[in-house]
Amino acid sequence: MTTSQDDRTTIITPNDGPIEAVFGEASPEQRVECFKQAGRSFVRSVPEDQWVAAEEQLGQLPLLRGKGCRHWCLYKADAPNEIISSLRTIRREVLIRDEQGIRQGTGYDIAMVATDAKYRGHGLASFLMRKVGEWADGPGAAPVTTLYTAVGPFYVKLGWELLPAPQVSFELPPGVSQDALQRKRGENQLLPTRLFGPDEMPDLCSRDIAQLRSQVEAYDLAPNTSLVTTLPIPEQLGWYQEMAKLQSLTWCEGREVKAVGAICEEADTWILWYQDLRNKELKIARVKPGYGDTDLAKQALVQLLSRAMEEALSWEGLLVKIAIWDPSSEVLGALEILGKELGFTPKSEMRDGVNQTSIRWAKAENRQTVFWPNEFYACN
Ligand SMILES: CC(C)(COP(=O)(O)OP(=O)(O)OC[C@H]1O[C@@H](n2cnc3c(N)ncnc32)[C@H](O)[C@@H]1OP(=O)(O)O)[C@@H](O)C(=O)NCCC(=O)NCCS
Image (cartoon, rainbow, N blue to C red):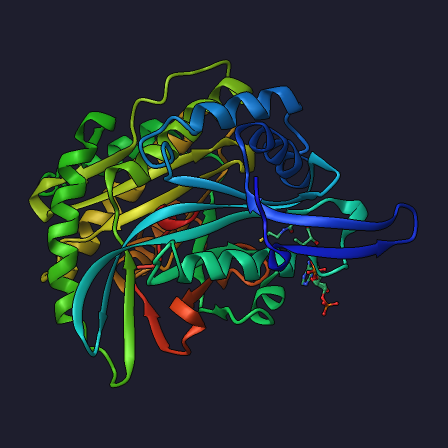
């Protein structure tokens, strides 16, 4: 592997003395070490071999395989398999509307940025991020790069912009049962709903994307503002389905993940969810409203969110909370109705310090940005 002087940096550490770190895209051997390093920083609850095996499996998914996911690292010049700092870039299909019109492109999401605890505070992650930014602006040809972060100010210093990251969530109220939810749903015969599995995702994603494009065209965008949206492609949602399966193996003896969402055809409205067993949350990954009749969409969402509660309950204490990112007024209206009927109070808050959305335009161009929709499906 040849590297230029620009790809190297030397740090002086109190215990190990000077260390020369080299930047590069991880080789297959280094990739395994990157998995381990990220695991040490982010998922201490899962044994290392299990985490590495899970990462290898995820790497075979359509979203990630080939160059869909790239691992970037700083490794020791004299010991290339010792990873000091690493991150990954995962492709994102994005739709952009700005003064030049509307266009689709391939951007990247940056995830799992971590420096070995021994070497933090020496500028390594900053160096790595700058190098990956150079790659994204050059060979990566990314119009835009995103990330979801717990350490927003760190990225702002590197030229990233933090965007508003609202969410609404609620705990499943004690005493609510699947029977009671089913009975309640049955009271509204006009808006029947049904669950759906992964086999319906490609069709639903196509319908969603076609409508989203029209919505992006029609969006009332302020002057000198760019709109960016991550397209809900099936590969993107498939990643979460695989994650749910893997989590089920760890926390629920491999219980089959059958339903990935619920739909109300009459209102052209559906929701997709992700059983985040590690965090005990059912995340609503995407809310696809019927555009046009907002009251109908709200009424359908009352039904669909009660389906989501049933799904969470069916995991018998393993999912205790439901969270929805970037909630629309229809979602908030539906939750208000459900909360009154079932005795819970939805909590609206900003995700400051957890999964805060951040964006970087090509060449760190400073733009007024609307990221819409900005829902969970686009994260990581
Ligand atoms: C965040 C992290 C990647 C920084 O790595 P690093 O190599 O020490 O980074 P650098 O030396 O380039 O920069 C350190 C800066 O990050 C800041 N930083 C570290 N942790 C931070 C946090 N939790 N919140 C805000 N800033 C933080 C430091 O204050 C320091 O700022 P300074 O340069 O003004 O002193 C490292 O602390 C880490 O691996 N943390 C655990 C994993 C993690 O949280 N990753 C981020 C996920 S989005």
